[in-house]
Amino acid sequence: MSFDIVKRYEHNPILTPDDMPAPCCAVYNSGVVKTPEGEYIMASRFEEPNKTQCIWVSRSKDGINFVPDAEPVKIVCKPEEEEEFNEIVYLNGNKGSLIGSWFDPRINPVGDEYYITYCVGGDYGCRIAIGKTKDFKTIEHVSFPMHVLNRNAVLFPEKINGEYWMLHRPQNAASTSGGFIWIASTKDWEYWGNCKVVAKPEQYWENTKIGPAAPPIKTEKGWLIVYHGVFPNCNGINYGCGVMMLDLEKPWKVIGRCPDPILYVKEPYEMIGQVPNVIFPGAVIPEDDGTVKIYYGGADYVQCLATAKLDDLINACIPR
Image 1 (cartoon, rainbow, N blue to C red):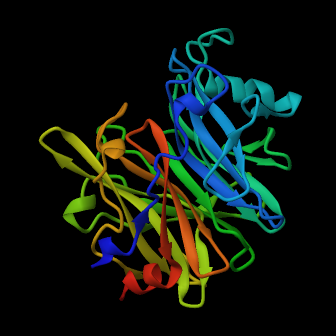
Image 2: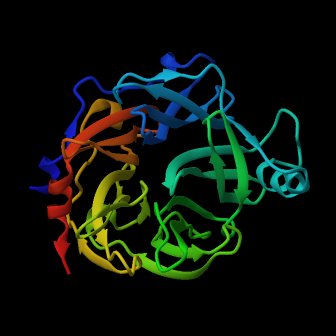
């Protein structure tokens, strides 16, 4: 069974509000990368008690025990970009205490650089932002690649057919349903086009909406994609984690997909939190022994970890 191939870390959660060096009511939905030096860097969605959100980085030598930085990440932009940035991220035009938020970061290694895709929320709703960083203490703003009401963006780690590619999920302004995975490409990080639908909900466990979760992993058989899926229940909604394969040269083409969730709500720390019944993956880190670490948020409250064999995830994707 596909839902037996992923194993939760027995001491989950691996990061909680009590671990943070500042007042915190939730820390979750993290992007993670393993550097060439072997350091694991986690960028988490950090929520203050007043519900202001930002990105906070923690670091680890083993991918399990993370030590938070002393301060959250700083977002910086060029002087000529400040007006646009402030217009999008602030609430009610207020640049003081009542500000918008930046959250749900994904760490995307592209070539020899680290790009951060994240969401910003303000007067106009949620919008994707792209930044890049060298030290994970400061993120330099690059662009807002897409329109508002769009989120969950991840980047492919290399150019395909001479362009950079991004998976993203536009939101349905009228409801929380109807979320599909789309793709777009660019040559300059500013102007994005070639927008196509990549995947729609197919199974009941994901029939409300789906969205890309972690940067694609290149394999001999295709691009391995981990995604989240949402389905309704009598008490609200329930998030799970799925996996699919995309064509190496035509990344908008699904060539394999697992019909079952590979990780579904089961443990108390996934059921009880700010938003009950949520598994929200944000990173998949391949290891030298053929396993992967899957990092996911639990109940919009804490950060969790699971492991699997890379080959098992690939083989779970039924060819099309």
